[in-house]
Image (cartoon, rainbow, N blue to C red):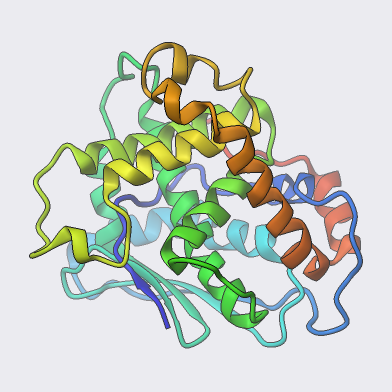
Length: 283
């Protein structure tokens, strides 16, 4: 199974919006195997008392319940558990043994890394918390989906999970897509600006943070060059890379359409679409 070290965390006041998931899927046959509503959740009590306020905050915000509803249309052959847990000082998140674990250390780190004021690039504190948090849950959900549905992956699975997460971030309301992508990109850019703590980062199963930063921007630009045109104009994404991003996104879209969308329950999709919930709460 796959364990993944991650650079972000969780916003207590605003996490996932279930109805946005419905916008991702407009049609497609329902796979015969599996059934919807297979997502289970668990807020484990922190091992470190320092994380108790964070534990209480995310429970009050019903963070895992929102993610549970977000993923509910997936038709899975067995239950998948989403949980937050203490990890003995390890800032991490992973999928293993039918369980997605996001550490309180990881969530706390993202809160500490988020800027107190809006950055010159327009990234707010909430963006820098919600974006990476939603992205990490979707990344690990990607690993789970590949495993549960026996999805063939050509290349590194960590790269495929990054693409899976970016794709689904981009399917939601445009007013929120910008903030989600900006927040995820902020976390990668911040991680890239710091010296690596890994003995040999070039040998790691994950791409370098700077590569992941450019990859998420490329997928976003390839999906909507109007909405994300400024990332090229302002030089965040090199023009020579941007030229091929539409093809990169089209390739990803074909793979998702063929391999993932048939495993979506359309009845659940319609119910979620009617909710019209949002990623970012007004409060």
